[in-house]
Image (tube, rainbow, N blue to C red; front, side):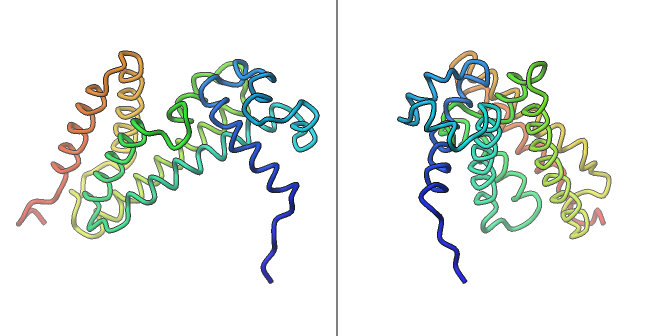
Length: 205
């Protein structure tokens, strides 16, 4: 039996979608009630009729923003031929999202980790969990590549995951700070070349 969503559920989801860019751009503290009212077109009572607190709305807005990013990264894997191709596509997809964010404001992980580090442990934990999932995804691709004989046997999945995510997030920060995408382009080229260098050479097995 197909369950249909209620009007209240649709309104709640719409609030989350409209609030997500506000929190992503301005952070939890910076996103005022006036900003949220302006974005959603609802008064305070209309918002809090669906959410018990600003904190609850912020958490659900983060989850929505991350779902959009995750969908984009997942689509980048369509048609990938092997582990090298999968990693390269993921790296380039992140750079593409940096130019045209799935949710206005940029990467929710970086924004939330910086904004909530010392003030909102619940949001910080959400960002940490998202990054851990990204690390595990890279690690799984590496392990699959090693099992298939595509990646060198001594490739460390944890080190590669850390290198890729740290480099991309750092490049995003520099690109935004200087308003110059060249920083991201350089890092993407370097990471793609590094991943390609891990391919098992003919006769190496």
